[in-house]
Amino acid sequence: MENKLRNNTIEIDKDKFRFDVDVYIFREEKHMAAYCPSLDLATTGNDFQDAVKNFYECLQLHVECCMEMGTFEEDLKEHGWKVSPKRVVPPSFRTQLKSPQLSELMQSNTNFERISAPVRIAAFA
Image (tube, rainbow, N blue to C red; front, side, top):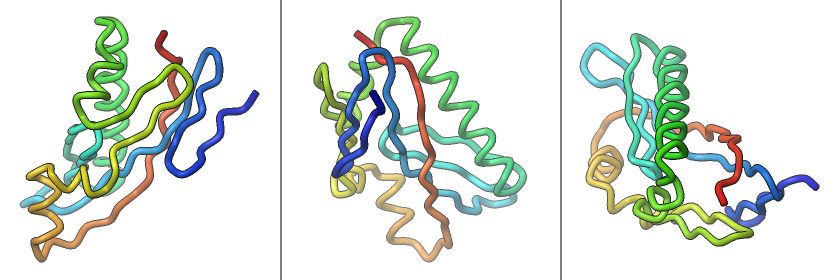
């Protein structure tokens, strides 16, 4: 059975799930920054591709650490995600705007690009 994304809700298969997170890429001084407000993760790189690559590494380490410690579900909830045995719903854009970093970015004159980063991990029980 395939996981299905409907209205930003992730349908969980019995052993894995998939979802996308928005990542904002922008110049910060001499580097490119990548920031994901729905998980409050940030990293930098020398250029756009480097920032994206570093974000995926950061995301992978974050998920692995949370899964090893058994805190992934708790971490998602702390960041505004709604988690149930069959679905995971990311926080709304309005909720994400409560993040000072995203709010500041949106109100600044900084050029940014929003990408949708796919996340594929084993489901937590």
